[in-house]
Image 1 (cartoon, rainbow, N blue to C red):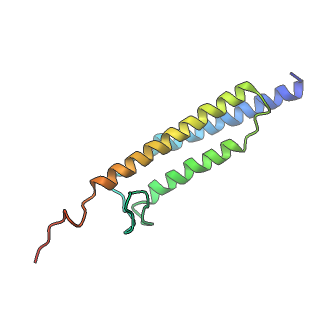
Image 2: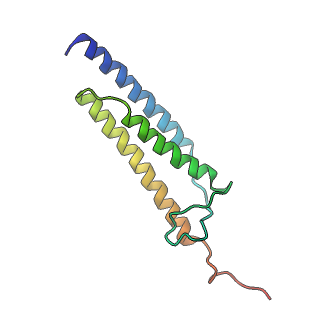
Image 3: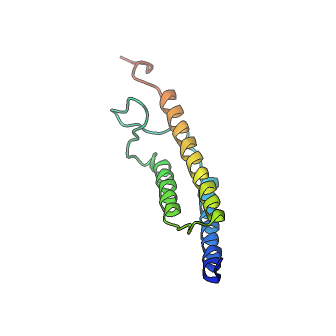
Length: 121
């Protein structure tokens, strides 16, 4: 390996490491909500209403997607170590997005529906 390529590998390795730290901070500090507001037309629970209650959840989703974009913008230069780091970080992002989707769907199916609400006359 050429000295410049070696230096680039170390630099990019630290870029990946910095991204991992940032992702971990976001993931560990996130508190899953007990409730979410769903859009009126949300039949499958995947459409959230744009409300203050949903803001932290939506922001977390946006952050994870932003991390995925950042990750994809870091070059690998055919370096096996960098490729492995990218795959590992990508998997962490993917797992957290999946966990959030599961949580969202769980809250959707737990929410009281019109049929379950009691009506007082």
